[in-house]
View 1 (spheres, rainbow, N blue to C red):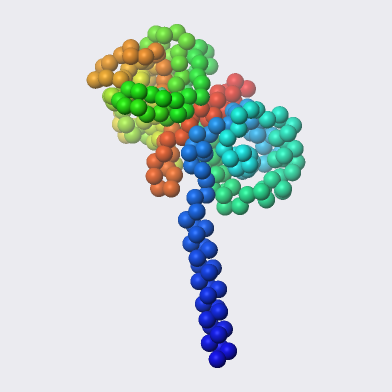
View 2 (view 1 turned 135 degrees about the vertical axis):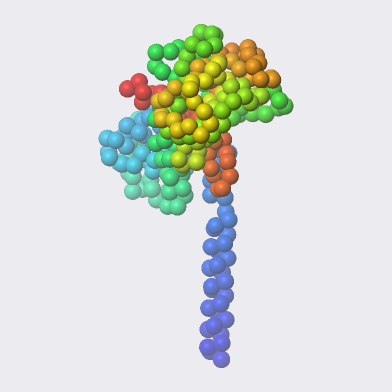
Length: 268
Ligand SMILES: [Zn+2]
């Protein structure tokens, strides 16, 4: 009799444990929209990067904790001393604020992107501007939102500025696309996709070619928004898109903070 009760209790405990594991594995861990919008000041990213070097700590781990602390949304730059105090001098407390596997998930992802981007797509000597326009409205081809960053040439002349590959990779797509004009898409070894659109012309590259970070892909232009060869529907600019694999699916992420980060490091 006792043994029977014991077995029943054991079964109930096991069932509850399995239910808990099942619920945990299905719970959405990260607010994906907020994560991919990446609304954080690039100054904070650069400060965390330089502090990580100073303290010899893992940049991607600290950045993940910072993002989780702020629900992936920070409006204003944080004073560097505050970041140092909160994340580097009190790291043991900081890492306890979130489940380890959550930090790890963000960390693995961020590390991949931050380390595969090696170049800003435009060289330092050129004049350009860019802003965070993630999610801004676009109407060509139906109402939709902007899923990239536009780097706008100050001088509105197509064919003047070289567009260089931010990463190593393989040319996955090249040729005309109605929205993107003459576009090229580079796939990295991690399976992420870097999309460069509205080019004026291409360098000597073809589908399937291997390209190195820093290699010229073509010249900045104003092509797209119409049948093949359409130009001048907007000012000369480069549209940069980054598509990542997330939970087995493709998703665009906001390139802006990554571009700013790469640009600022380039100027150091
Ligand atoms: Zn764009």
